[in-house]
Length: 263
Image 1 (spheres, rainbow, N blue to C red):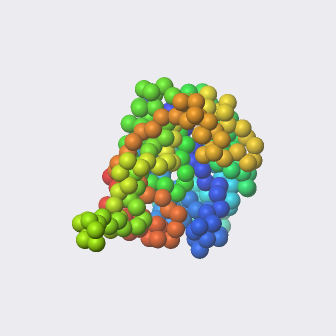
Image 2 (spheres, helix red, strand yellow):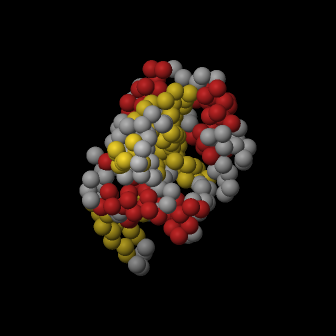
Image 3 (cartoon, rainbow, N blue to C red):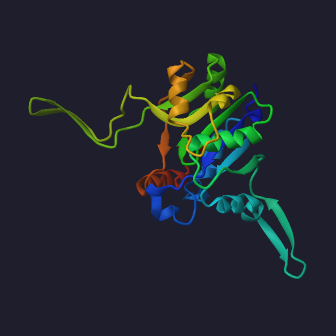
């Protein structure tokens, strides 16, 4: 199955309260990482593996996201504007993106499951499978490989499992003698939700549109208990922008030209 046919639903409606200094006036997915908002980087992570259909599940400050994509050509090309007639001429595009982007308002305060349910029932179309992710997480995982794994296992859902480094150092001792010192060791064997999902469309039967439906609680918990949730393990790069420190780190990678998610 061609990845170009698979819609990617991106959760863009949360308040981003842990990054308040950046999200008071814009949704977290629109916080810049280098020259572009982190949302652009998330979409590029999919696009490099052939995905091109995106449905953005909007909520808080939806107008900021709509404005960005509505004026995408103006932002990324030289432009001539006739001030008398208001005629706008967009010159050579400075990008080669062929994305189809649907901007779907899913409620100001709705939770993640409700947003996906609303948007998918409107914009899934005839697609048998779909992807879901957040607007603040990046990875160098081969998402096309995860999708192939999802198809091969024939489960309703697949989640990217990641094994992130600890935020704290680890010291191993023999009595009082330090035998190993690791500043930020990988938590090997401790898998967490990396936030990159694939689902069969039948999963929507388990996903109510109720405002309080949280994807990660009832729906995914029950899916796991029913043996219908698989993990695609990834031990490469993964990063989530929860704090200003996270943003600084991702920005440093982007501006160095060595961003793992863009290679």
